[in-house]
Length: 214
Image (cartoon, rainbow, N blue to C red; front, side):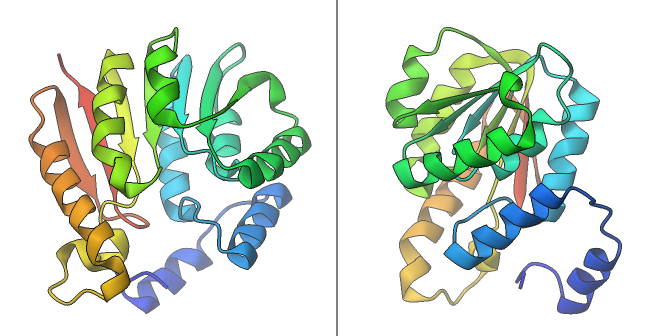
């Protein structure tokens, strides 16, 4: 349950959900069962709207997990558009490949196995849209790398910036203290970066949206 919005608000939003893709529900169920972190469905809806508005030709996803957001990206991309998606977990990649094949969207998805910190500097393309959802301790460095390969006028979309509400909390459970520190530091960097017009939106677990302005 979200600690960002009230329980009755979450329940109300769920009652209005308009999703009919059984594969999406299957991935959500598996993620919940195996405790795999994926983008909140409400934030994923918002992400899809950003894809439809911005119409990117090439997308970079940093953190495939089990391809939940990857598939939601791909189903909204126009023909001949590509999403390069990076994942280092072999277990996640095995499941991601299964779901990507099942989605019928393989021609739009280029799954790259490896550590994003090593992969991104070797990429040969620049991107219209970047989605960052990886290890929180790596957010700052991945953000800097992302700005290098993001085109001017391109969009960067970052998940978990309210971090279950702990980013704004005075009392934080011990196991979240370090990760919350990383998120708070990242938020300051993200919101004050001279290369971006940035905003933080309290959807899902908190998403940051930045447009590269120079």
